[in-house]
Image: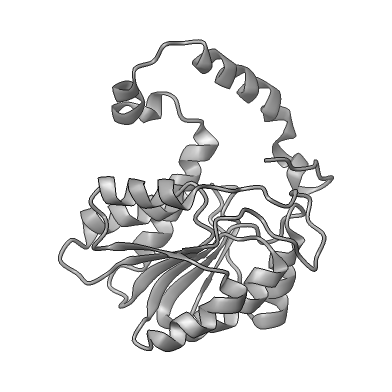
Length: 237
């Protein structure tokens, strides 16, 4: 996955990249057993990656008690998709809450707004994500919808008129996708629910910010100050 440097938001943590790269190389040089990675992951994970997990957890917690499902556009390797599934297992085991993930599994597509992420980046195998879902026993609460959301999301929602969301993660980044999906999802958000924006106000994918301006020009976009991404969220009032 290639991406080009930026001059503004990209540079905020540029001074950390060299030391973090050296740390990653150090970990690669060690023969660390898989069970260590799984059971003691906080020994190894970088604090910025951990803050992302904690940030998504904090946003999820804000929606406990709100009716609706969790959705995500842009599954990639499934980090946030499976996190939400596990949070439901822990906090809502007896509720009807489920996760619906949408992705076309072809990576970043072309866009009408110039990005600094190359086309085809963030590509992952649909079959691998599906297998991970089945192996973890989430087939009854986490659903993977392989589709081009620009062309197919509206039809999917029309076929499933009951679907309502309390938390929705916009993790696609492109203007084309966010512009097409956000109005459809916003209509299905329960008041008190939250739309999470992964790359709002970020130069690597400026189309997301533009789409939010166009679709929800009066939105009060908030941040969680201790995480770098996702970089914004909106509560539906």
